[in-house]
Image (spheres, helix red, strand yellow):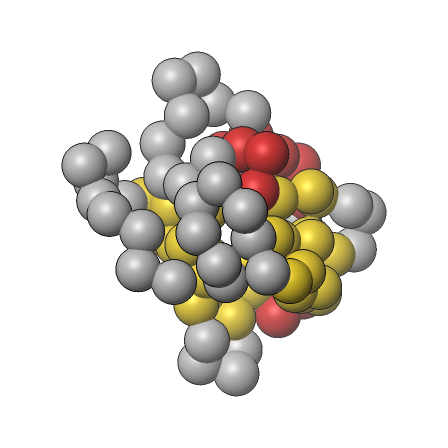
Length: 79
């Protein structure tokens, strides 16, 4: 995935939550633009814990992103 494509989704106004799928079968839900930092070759996601205080960071190579899936604005956080 190109970083510009991911940044476009992260910067969308109004923000639309999305799920990021990766090659190992995992997926990560992004509910707020502050939850993800997009770099040239990877994304850094704050995951785990509550929506207000995350437990850890996941570093994901953009070459491993297989697809992005928009979530319903009313979706509730499950991770």
